[in-house]
Image (cartoon, rainbow, N blue to C red; front, top):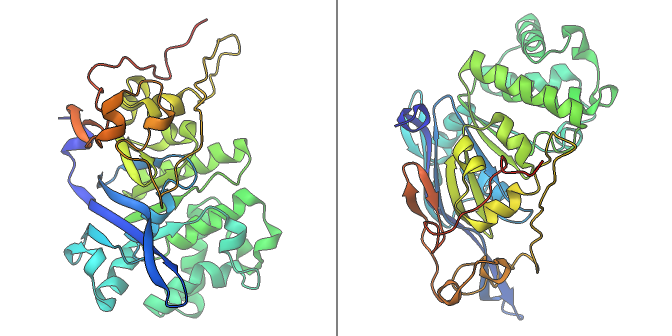
Length: 344
């Protein structure tokens, strides 16, 4: 067993579903459902990072909001191992329990410009959770905000300024400082670097990694950029139309994928060698609608390896190798390319 698999979990998601009803007519009768998240399961060990990747619309962000209970799941369990309350099923928790659990679970959003109130100073933004939850005021509040700003690499003198005075990378650091205000155990980072320049992305990722080591944080890192996910994640779950189609530790998944969709995603990862000949796998067709997915394997209309059984039977997510799960009928038979297999 690897260190990742052997570490006690801080979050366990089991059979999570989030369906949104489709209504029609004057009486608003339910005619169907958008299956945004359709029965996914994964675990985040304490002090580790689980990357959640996939194309836009696959259900990554919806999963994050379900874990935070911004959305009440249709079905499934979200077991958060709180340092004070022990194991709590967030999906069924009452308001009082949720209020406590959310102190230990925080979220960093994609667009720092949209997630920060432009009329509030950094003292107000970063200090708001401390005022609401810890009732800090005056000098005590300023000292804590100064400490948090220094923690993310910003000067305490900045606390009187407004968000518009900062660059995108600095605003994301402010968002991280706010998320850390209550000393959480677990952070959901929803596309935290996708709106930043590449050079600033690296700085922000390095900051998150150093904070994880220093504060023993656990992350659910949601992204569509696989090169970013590889840099920060200990394990990766690949989503397609609301389902997890492959899950494994990062190095294993990137070097030895078992699902054709993962292979296609990995073929788009930039290679550092300009002389390398890259064989990009271009998927035909469009991503199916979660309101009307195809029969059998959802990926079969775009899969070059598909056979008759793929359109007839949905493959379960099963453990093909120790710690490596894939939802493909032919996972044991296919030889797929990882990111290291390039022609020079």
